[in-house]
Length: 244
Length: 228
Image: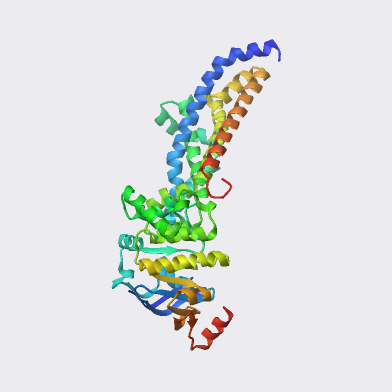
């Protein structure tokens, strides 16, 4: 459903420019959890952010359900983004909006009617187990709860894909578990395809079916996760898996 | 307190009332202009800046420059400089309505910069999340930026109101009227120090009232930390 072909991305100009992405290719299948892994600065987050064009690649092709993203006009891109959810390491919730109002935001953007928004918000908050907290403000929640609000917001408009940028990296071990379970639930129960960028190998082993490992802006190897273990052939990958 | 002081005070009460009305008029016009035009300009300065949602170097340079130039004028000089404009807009160059013109110009520039600064403090990630959900620039401005920055914006507006209360007193010198004018005419020029002290005290109380209500409102509107 997602086909990424030969994307490159350079940051900066001239001699100081950095190749953030170098001829990156991967594809994500419908319904799976696919992980982009690697160390900081390896390019995994940049690659993830290319999938909704928060980062625009310099060249290459990104197709989602057969549609080329790089050809979309500004308004087509906004509509497309409305149908693809995203969650962030720092949650990025609107602090002066309540939990329910945060989840309502993508629905307002998509032009839903207010009664429909209310119903959908309640339904979505029940999915992530935060219905009781609907009138709280983000500052009154724990990190794990904040991320679950992020997930609710991400799936409110019934997207087929959820992008997760380091979703558990800011959380303590206990709340990591909470978010992991929540992501697994929405994948299995709602069939949402999830693409995760993370350096947390544990999350990948427990959640993903497949992964691509990045280094220096390139994909080193594509990996399968079988029974919670990752099979690696490449030396770099093996070393990464040992230390991570 | 002696009776003579009280008699003086009662004597100027009608004048104080009139002066308060004039000050109120000047402030109201200046603050409304600042809120609407300065607020809009501040939002656009934020959107036009490098890396902003509607990045436009030229517009940012031109309008940012205009704001800087206006703000670098000493207020009294600004008042004199814009007299031709004042005559066109207010029909006269004397009185509170006339003084409201330079006051408004200065207030617009001042508030525009304060708004831009307040918006700069909104975390980049929150705006990015809204972009990732397909929000348009106007949706981001009204539902994210102005919502997240509303407490600092209220404080900025409060600080504007306090500053311009004292600016309006300066406007009094060139026939603008108002409380400051009263203090100078009765208190300073006629050597009635009690009147000057009383009017100044009145201004101090007014500033306290403005600042306290602004701070209270800002606290009420702010949910960014768990304290509230």
